[in-house]
Length: 170
Image (cartoon, rainbow, N blue to C red; front, side, top):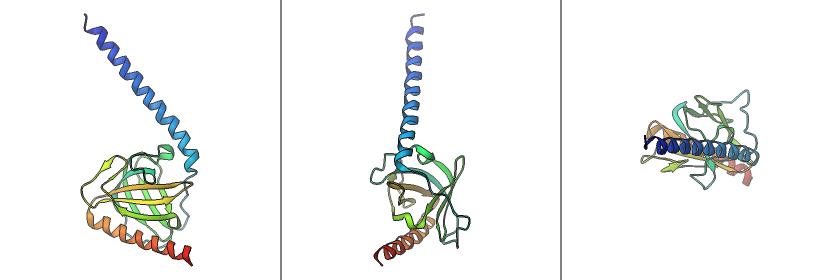
């Protein structure tokens, strides 16, 4: 009989902690949605495909330079299986269980391989991080299924970044 009271107290405390965490995540989600601004919508015509669609896990988006600071609003902070493909107009991320994400080509500022992003760590060259501009600079991570596809995506995105830099300079 003596063990029931501490057990019930521990369960109640755990439930309260989880509810507090959920409330905090939702509050933060609302605050960051205002800071990040609206997500861009994909145009009707995406233009020519620059890469094939690659199976990938959308790792999440963070504020630029803060690889652990997820952006919870607008579905940017949730991991999802899906695919990623670069088109003439931008990067299309098809995500299972949530809305697709579109990153306009002219907002892509940088691309790199990384070992960690949004709490996900990878030892191989499969984790691709794209820096792009909303109301603030955002970094979105994608874990591709193999290194060859990751390299192909990075090469194509580097071409987009170079074109953006040439447009800004010219």
